[in-house]
Length: 396
Image 1: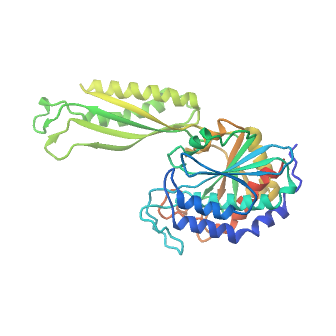
Image 2: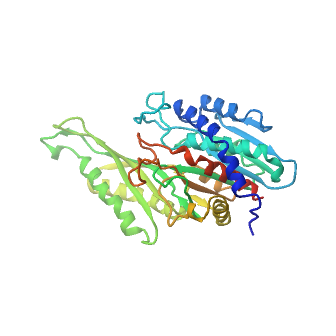
């Protein structure tokens, strides 16, 4: 039975009282976004925000990560709370007082919000450390957007001694303040693939003197889809997308090669491996059917993000106790986005939840989604996220 003592109005009000600090940090990070594993400006802002909280702070060696430990001095679990720090290579086109000041870089996935809410949760928990037992590890992580930042932090020991873990992710086209999660697969694996078809170039007026790589490249677009429609059990789900095709230079030259790339995603590691095998076979046989050869490669991305059933239930219990049943949703199905928090959940029981941050002046259906150049975050319910972070620790 979950112990929900102390989880309720007082905790939510304490989180609400930190609103100004939360918003100020979020906007400061938003205005100066950074990409990848080296985020020195963001790291400095985090350190400023948690200074004086009596935390044991460790800085990353291979990245600009920040790990901050809170020890109550009493026996209990060690709970990890994670917030990712990095932005995306995208020009921000929504004008605001804190619009990105860096050309071609934008916090278009809400990681600035994650950091700000986690820093406020660190302050709340530090100031109320007599109300719970054990330890809290605050994981401020660079490089979530394709750089495998969590993996680097795990290699440096961020999970040593951790009993359970929790992360929160904002979604700009979900109703403001709503918390949503589910047990089992939550987000997909995400692998990148590439194919280069090798032919023989020549004059476009004499295709018989060439081995044209474009027809097999075009055929692969359709043939790859038969992996999903004809080889995969219909009860399973997967996506194989051709996102980029490039070949040739002008109208009267048949090129010597053609290039294709895209993504493949699924919610099951066994299905993931099966799609990899089929992808190489289909690429090779399609090329050979057109007298060409090919090189194919799958570049592994993030694993499936799988929530522990008990921790997903705990998330729902805490969110409901804090916010009411109408502010918590059990997701009916997983989403095809991917997350490197999956590396954490592969090692320790834990859960990730989503929090809606849809702006008040627009409906969720009309809101710009995450990764949009017009993506906006509603800051008015940040206290929901701060309180949920803290509540996941205080349940004991």
